[in-house]
Length: 253
Image (tube, rainbow, N blue to C red; front, side, top):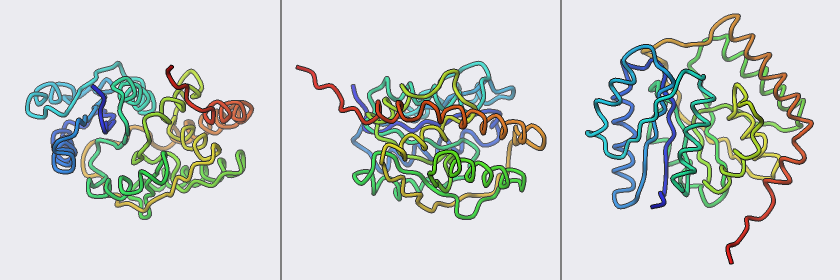
């Protein structure tokens, strides 16, 4: 059975808020798509608190939710594994968001309304409630992408994006291995260079009230340098990657 829409949501140490966030997004699916096949795919990335146990305990209450458990591999790894599951389920559209309750479900409609205009649509945190160091890193990466690729994307790593399943399958096939630290940046760059309009639609970003930020201070600077090096290396392969993405899909006889 194919799905109209899958929502991919990585989760790490979000025991205080995970059920509320699951309820918000599954309620949105039931409200907007009452007769359509949809799923919320939550990837528990080796949480050290009770996030995994809570997800298992509420599965029956939220039949549209699917839970995947994996050893801790980082946010990017969890996102990619969620994407792969969504593609395996033959999802026509795949949406990705986070589990920290910093986004609102009403903003999903802003992206969904434009799904026929582009197969790759990004939100944009016009007012962002994150630590100052994270805001600086975001600006550095934005300038790095512009400098390395000649491409300007306002919020290339935003966890609020809608992708057509057929394009996501192609993008995942071209993603470098091992999985880069911030794969969503690579997906956005490839989509943009392949000629798709990402729109960068303004959305609401709320202050984080629970949980802990896993990457701060020097570790944040370290992963920023890692991402920069990965992006610079990827530039050498980008031309061939984009050609592969642009290839027409094979039609079964």
